[in-house]
Image 1 (tube, rainbow, N blue to C red):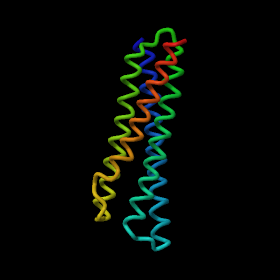
Image 2 (cartoon, rainbow, N blue to C red):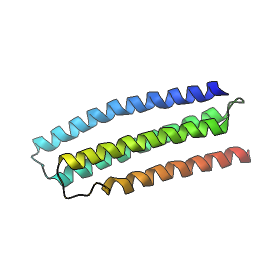
Image 3 (cartoon, rainbow, N blue to C red):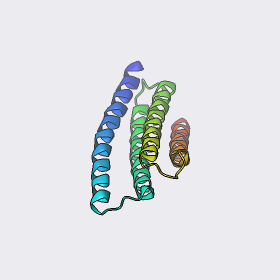
Length: 142
């Protein structure tokens, strides 16, 4: 049972690392592009960064759900352990995204409040948890 959970955790960690590398490249490209276009208004930077965070958090949640479904097909699967790993992964991604957005807001010294990204990211986290519950109930129904 624990082996399945460990495999799931490793898959999520690999995806997390891969998305982090891709996200860094996207941020670098985005901010270089904005600077070249002389678009230095802080609102644009924050808005574009928020779009990137939403995009990457959705990708991670979709990946975590698809892997959750495949792990649950295993006869040794312990749904409680795998669910905990899913929630931990989503919460980690959420906190990293929130930290990054707060740092961007503080760096551009914007009039945007630090709680601006919280609503957007919290909504995505909530949707991921709702999807998890939906998947769990469909597994139980089968």
